[in-house]
Image (cartoon, rainbow, N blue to C red):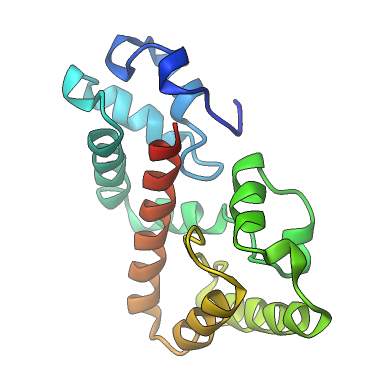
Length: 175
C-alpha cells in the first residue's frame, strides 16, 4: 500500500474501483489502518462517495462505529509529533505534514519539551498525541499539547479521534 495518493484527476472515482484498488488508493488515509477502507468498501461504495467530503464523512462513520479497541489501535498507529520517535520511520504523509508545521526544525529546547510531553501524554492516555498540524506552527502545537495533556481520558480519546478525522479529511482534500 502506498503512503501517498495519486491525484483524483489521474484516477477513477472511488465508486468505480474494485476493492483492492479502493483499499490501495484510500487505505493510507487513516494512518496504518487500511481496515477503515476495507470496512467502507464492504458497506458499499456508490457515486455519492465520489467527492472528498462525502468520502471523508463515510470513512469517519466507519471509525465512529468501530469498537473502542479498534479506535485505540488506530490512535496507536500514529507517530509522535516532533519527539524522538517522530525522527524515525514516518509515512510520507506524516513526514510531509510534520515538515509543513516546522516540526523538523525544532530547537533543542523545543525537542526536549516535545519529548517530555510525548512521554507524559502516552503514559497518561496510552496513545500518542495526535494533532492535525496543517495550518499550525510549533508554538500552536506545543500550546495545544500543554492544554490537552491535562484532559481526562474520555475527553482526550474523543479529541484524538476527532483529530484523526481531520487529518483524514485534509489528506482526502489534498488528493
